[in-house]
Length: 267
Image 1 (cartoon, one colour):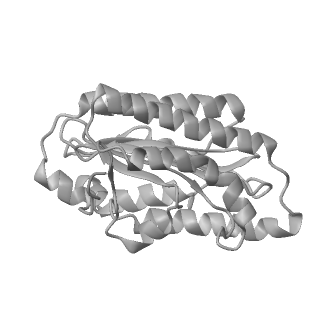
Image 2 (tube, rainbow, N blue to C red):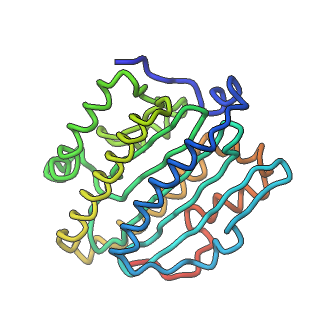
């Protein structure tokens, strides 16, 4: 096993600020777009007008980005986005999916990027307390454990440990959060893992039993609180401020968690 990476994304970029990552970015965005196409085929998504101004956006520093948000009767909020400077080390992209409260299947967390090595994050975000609901844990986390152990024991994948304790709080025991050098082999393994994670999640969604109606308001409130907290506390926001300024960053963060949405909430 390789040593855990405890340095921040910003610190890694400062060490190697001028790595041309266009090729890696293109490969990672292709993976993300493949997953988005699968989601589009399963759900009847509508784009929320609140993200229209960010398709795309750019700054005077040469940084660019793209942010689109969606919802439908089953999905409360979906973010499909990228941000960064592909030719100078830093990029970050997301496909994050918050379900409506009519089922309690975990939400889907997914991010890839360069810093300048590849950053990968894939996880199932629990909608209940798995510490006190082992049936939930066994259903949704045991199936992901083999892949977690495989990557944890792969010397090319260095576990990324956030310096921010709250970011570690919001990761499950099978969260795939690594730094890895970009090669044809590692990109192929990342792609394979990404499709495995999404395909498993889609099966869960299709086979889920309805959640109790009385529980749904609390599930919806919890989801939005977590979504907002993660977006607002993300240490990488400091990089966005450097690239786009505080005012633009604040607008992006609010759009990320759905604070200015116009579409109705799911469920």
